[in-house]
Image 1 (cartoon, rainbow, N blue to C red):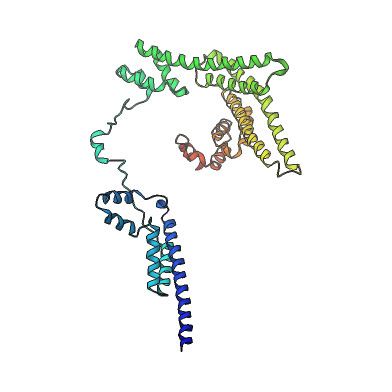
Image 2 (cartoon, rainbow, N blue to C red):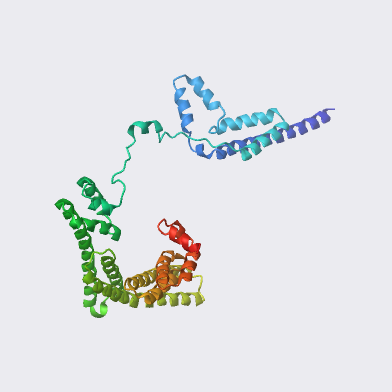
Amino acid sequence: MINFFSYYEQHIFIILAIHFILSIVIAFLLSLYALKRFQKSTKEIDEKDEQRLNAIKNKGWFFKTLYHASLHKNNQIALFIFTFLFNVSIPFLGYFFSMWIFWYMLNVKYEEKIVNTNVLDLDEFNESFLKVERLFGEGSMINMMNNEYIPKSKKLKALSTLASSNSPVSLQVVKQTLSSNDDEIRMFGYAIINKAEKNINLKIDENLSIIAKEIAKGDNKDEETIAFSAKELAYLYWEMVYAELSHENLNVNFLNSVITYLEIAKDFYLPHLKTIVKQIEEYEKDDKLLQNLNQIKRERAKLQESYTMCASLFSLMGRVYMHRHQYEEAKSELTVAKELLSERSTFLVPYLAEVYFVTKKYDIVSSLFKQTQDLRYNAKLYPIITQWKSA
């Protein structure tokens, strides 16, 4: 009889030991996961907990102890003790219930709460919102400049807004003020045009001096520096013509200068482009391909830059030929630029379309606009593209 009870007590002890071990393991896992489940507050007590602690700080030690013993996501010890006692007090069924809690924490999803940041207070707009009204009124800027009944203050405001832009449209408006009867407006217009011309001339002198210094070095001259300055000079001379800052008698000389400096830049960048292509081919044929991957990436980045540079030279040359009404030459230059840029050549399509339109090849104009999708986002070109696509 004694052996039976001792045998029975041993089994009960083993079962209780297993029960306690499982309860400890489950309680530890659940309390640990509770911290990971709420990652925003695992490192330190969040603001709400701090506010609650400050609220009961002066209410005595009992309330502090009660708060620290309560169940919340930052109190791992309290969670562990609660889960452990829960599993111990409800053998077997407590395991399943604890595992259900674990599954629920894994799959539960909370609704996103919209936090009121108080950044915008719409009621304040009734009192503090700035008043928006027309500044220049209806009508074009040119008509406003030529209208004697428009107040001088509005004309000066319009000129001040145009002073920061050197586009042909802006300068064309400014030029309308040169014949104004008002001395202040006329002098302001002269000042804007003079400033634009002076800025371009300073850049031209700077690049010319760079080329002169490099040529003076003889055999030690830097061809890349000369080519880059020649490219800058080509764009500067073109800007003088395109923005109508130069006199009509000088336009021919400026356009010839653009072509000359573009040829100088091409003589460097085109062979440089071919050199990069050959270098990449040599790296790819090399047996040590893995060791050359970084070098191939760098060379391909240089190749893209060279494509962009050469395309800019050909596109500018094409626009110069268009200005001189040499449309066959313009077509060949723009076509090469388009091939160099491939997918990034959308901005060249209007120039090519203009060339084909002037040469009366309307079917090609229609096909160009139909093949190009990005231009439909251009507000100026959208009506034209729509018409040609429907043709």
